[in-house]
Length: 435
Length: 58
Image (cartoon, rainbow over all chains, first blue to last red; front, side, top):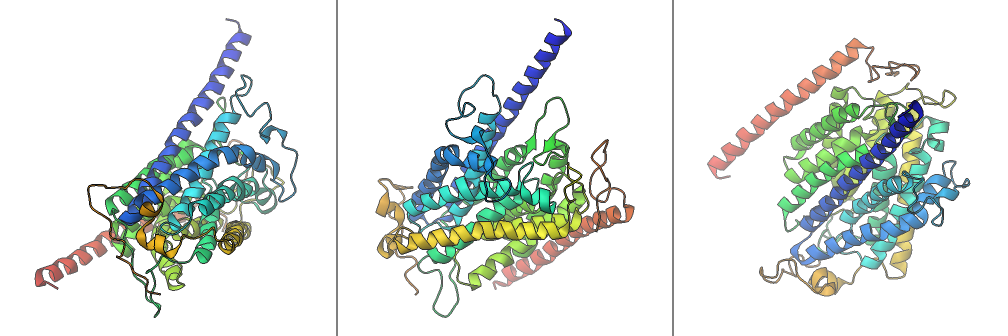
């Protein structure tokens, strides 16, 4: 074998290694959805257990074709804001958008991004369980997963997104475009959707509505954590012949992500344990800890990632209590865990990682002001479409199930099977209307 | 607060935050240890109170 043939073989091996790496990231990310499925079904009362699962499964299923149709194109076309640039390779009839022996990358990256998209829909999915209509939910899931978050990714999770080129934005683990956008989108939907029947009393007090299986919920949360390693691995770019880079093109190592993901995980659990002693919130704290450190997983000194994760674990329960006072019923604390911890992640990066240069010396270095403005952009990008479109769905009667169906339980009202057919009829009257 | 130990990615090796600031590194280490010890202490206190209440039947 001559030198040229040897080089060609090495190059091909690098390409195949890249494909293999992202293939397994995708597989691990599917575990996120197994986790969300268990989490939501466990957090639902027995009378709604399967309906919550159906909703989650459908979000995943509908995002696969819709992200193919327009999500990938949006990512490639909008790094400058709202005015698209030419992105013919993202159109669904492009040569790259199907089996092509000259393109090993598009399918595998599109697959990974589709799984990120499905994660955003799952974040919203948990918040709205037990009273949202499936049709309205699917419309919202497509809007969030195939349009809104990916527009945020094009702006702030892209090698040349305008938040980075103009403001110095940095966000290794997508705390902004995935978690903040999805958390604030869910908040906008929750305002129009309203609380579950019996959740709040006329005097302003509230009634907890425990799910039917706390162990299932906790195991689901742990599965989400397992899947996060695929998610965060998918945030790194494999170059084969050179050092890893992040999505902004800055060199990094997977070792950095191992150090700091684990530190955020531990800090988040410990913070939530200190505040609540509640295993549901401890595992939510694990998520919040990783999300809190996500923006700087490639940069942080590990004890700093631990402390940032610890603060994230401490703040989610009070944040959820605050929206409860506003009579907003977030069934799983999704806004607090993803929205609030996502914002904290970006703010923390501005405080603790200012000064790092971008890959292009003409772009601003990481700075607190740029991170604060970018965080506000991500919050608005999530909240406004979530609020406006859910208001439209509410106006046309597609947002919420009827009161009788809600009291009866959505499984009995909509589905042909029951979750535990030998366990008797779930109590339909446990939470009678309080308002 | 400029925490970056590098001005350029060219030839960079140690890139973690505050790598060139021993005081900050020491501070974060001490704070991490304080959180670990403090939460264990708070947990022990909480357990003592919980068990005392359980034994009194409260």
